[in-house]
Length: 157
Image 1 (cartoon, rainbow, N blue to C red):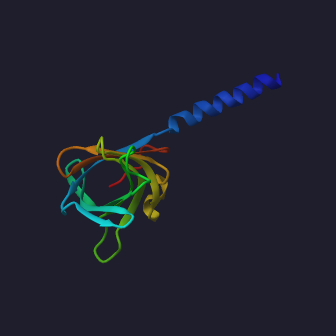
Image 2 (tube, one colour):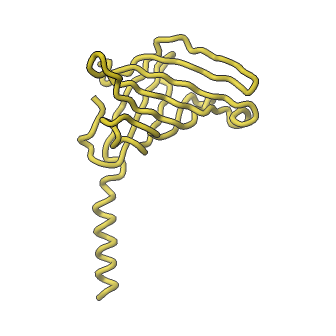
Image 3 (cartoon, rainbow, N blue to C red):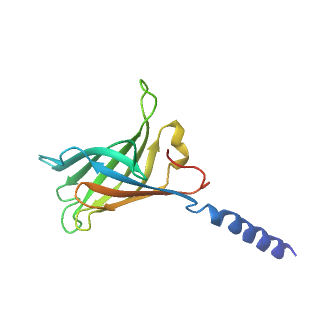
């Protein structure tokens, strides 16, 4: 009897939690408006870019992205870079924007990114830990997707 109850509790818990796995998601377009800038130093190269964030073709904010190539650490055979991408979501004039920061790795061979949401301002704390990835959608354009556990009703503006 005890075994049957434990099995029922485990099965019920799995059934309840399974729908939460990546229940929400958003697709954004990052459109670069600055020149892609490479800055070399003794340890490697920084790569900087910035631009607009679009959701369904509507501008919702701006982004700043930097990649770090460290000689001997991210170079061949990996051909990758440590990447930090911060999304600045438009807010009322005169106040600092809400923001979401993603960290992970950019693969120069495939031109894509894999990482997660590492930080978010108060309005978007629920997205922390969400999976993130982008791929090239043309010159100066990235298709970014973020998925999170939790309610699918939660979304970015």
